Image 1 (cartoon, rainbow, N blue to C red):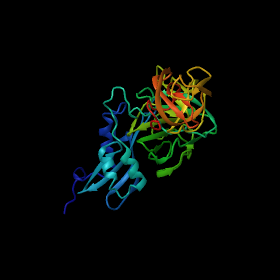
Image 2 (image 1 turned 60 degrees about the vertical axis):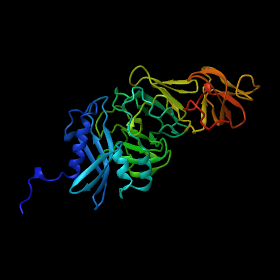
Image 3 (image 1 turned 90 degrees about the vertical axis):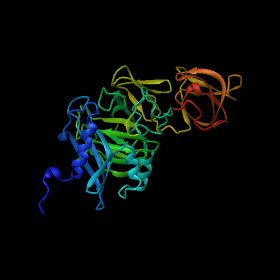
Image 4 (image 1 turned 180 degrees about the vertical axis):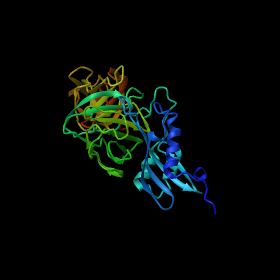
Length: 378
């Protein structure tokens, strides 16, 4: 029997993943002219029964403002050919439910990952719920420099999904618990942690990073040290971590999201902007103190420039004054009700929140990440 010429043979796994990467590159800004040399295929797991799992990366040009694009992939060999699907595709979620090389906790995480809403003009990826349950990616109680304000994963591209951080002890920690993966083919530089609720976080330029192939990590787990690694391309000057937010397998704006009880606000251009903790504002180049994660039924008091906010015995100014709470304080919310209308930094609302101490505060002076009740109606 005569062997088939190479051109007629079924592609190998790497060839099949590379072909899909190059097809994806045609619709990925900055990668339309990518060739096979500009790709990395990192096979993390492979079974004798025709299954494979790993990461597929478009390597960025080694220039300022460039960053790689990467996806987890799942592959199944059937009838002599490979079916390849990338993170964010409906087939990825479907195939993961029956793939024997996908662990139980991964199946649930992948099932929660929706499809990117690329058609949105003004994206509301979180559906109006901007609660992340995340801390800043370093030790609670430390202060690090925000060396770069909101910017795109690749610099000036949109959405502005990332910030740059450096300083402290240089130890980069998981912003929230999840499942971690090393994205670059040589195992260096880039860690992705997939969390619940469709969120994931990316950490790039790491030095001495962990090896992760579906590794379960808790909030605050060590991921690596700040560095200048560019194993997947791009550039870096000055050791830092390029920290980015994803939801439903796509980069999403950091605008309005909260990390370590700081709300991130973009500026007029990439790398500009500031962060707010209550009324306290820190601009680019300033230090962010890590207060820890804000709970899903908590809020940060924002006195809108004042020193404190009044607490009432009921949901409105017609009720008695029973104390105050300072700007920047964290409060826990028992339930909510409608009352008198007030205007704060985040808009005008008649919503009042009953705190766990029995007092009431207008929602106009709280950042909770949600425009409605965070713990049900009273």
